[in-house]
View 1 (cartoon, rainbow, N blue to C red):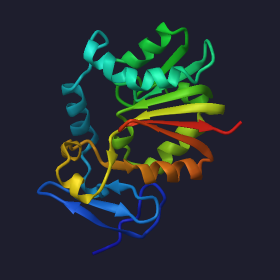
View 2 (view 1 turned 90 degrees about the horizontal axis):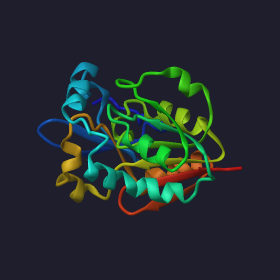
View 3 (view 1 turned 180 degrees about the vertical axis):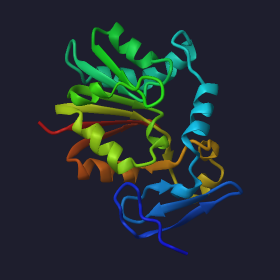
Length: 214
């Protein structure tokens, strides 16, 4: 069987982690990313069709409560009138709206719903990325871009559910979404913090905040 390199750190030291009826899941021994091999990814049209089906609305109080788990700890770290980018905002950019309500300036980007590449030419006090990183086909390239968008002492706020171990993964509903192809653990987040020289804060089960150096 040919070796499939890790899409985050490019290590070739990868091995099978789990397999179900639909897909294989490999794990990198260096950065600990769990990932679906590229030949099992959905084509973009099929991926977008799933996103279209699960649209979240900006007036959804439950969704607002969910996003507040990142918005509140992130806001406590921000100066007044900070400048931010919601990366992967989706069709209903509620988080951007919530942060604007707190006086911050927000821009949005999404490959399918707000494809405005010009916003990626600036740097920001903070970047949010909620329920997005698990969809990354090329996580190394995407994280290079995300960390590159931060000003000194800038914050990158992420929401994604974290891998615990193979036993929990076997029963994990999160892996069953066919658009989820990159799965992160606390070890992987620590690898990212070390690699990009950031402070790491993991808040609860699925909220991660990186802080860039001065």
